[in-house]
Length: 444
Image (cartoon, rainbow, N blue to C red; front, side, top):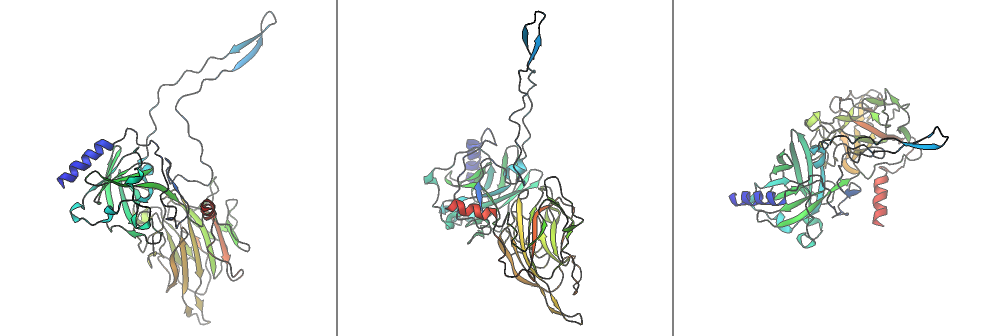
């Protein structure tokens, strides 16, 4: 272990950059490892700062631009003279903007690594992950062949007070065929200045704003993971003919107590006006980044089907599937896989609901059933619900409205629509959206 510590300290000194946010050319190592949708290598881009429209331009620097304004007047001799306004004085040097390291490192990373990384070596289980920036991508000979067996993925999230944790996956990111946790242990660490140190892996992983470089205890570079930003395959799905448009950013007529902001986003805490037994529901949601919170206090909302059965909404990014996490049937069944994306970017829920059936005497003949897709990946497969979940209303033959839960966290919604299957049967669901179409176009 002493030899490893010396090596890692030497590597940190050798590789430490001068500027944390200097852009690094990123490559897309695995277009095929993209089950959730389109993923773009991060070119010095924070993955979460996504909105419904184009991002506004940031100031280029802190200085004011001097201008020459010409004014024309008459002299005493009747000649025209031009008066020039004086240039505005340059302001004092302004301090550089404060770096939000939570957003800098939040996100997903993916790439091929040398096969030696996956060799078990219990003597090297306590190596560290160091975060820095502005390093060269590994030369081709340093990288392992780009097949799924050598693909490594990292999900990294802030937990508050300069702390971060992460999960490593082999075979791709969650949702990819063959993806599996590299270890049940989370990588946990503390950032100090421009450096983030996580423990729990047998190698050092140097993370910058566009990717990660893996280095073993002997100083050998094992590969590089590029920063990627995936999108749900159903993001931007257009409601088919016959669908009921609940919310499209123009009004709230199909909502009870619905409120929207200037961006055309729907606020949490509203009910859908249509009440029907069997339906397919598409909606898109955006979670806040609440670095200092965890568990149920981190970006909490939910879709209460008929006010009785909750499909959980939560910031569960970079966490293992749990029975009250995002994609779960709340406190009833964990999702089959956790395909939650980072907060601050738009995600999708596609839910197929079948209402319970009743006899004339009020006894239940069959249970409610739910299939749900989180970010385009099936996470609940035709699950039978024996009763309400969480704080759901009691079951009865009476229809109740579906609601978007008010849990006081700033969760926003858009593109909400419903298919009443009793009126418009036979429509394929879920429906692919703009992200899937773009991926297909790029493949051609």
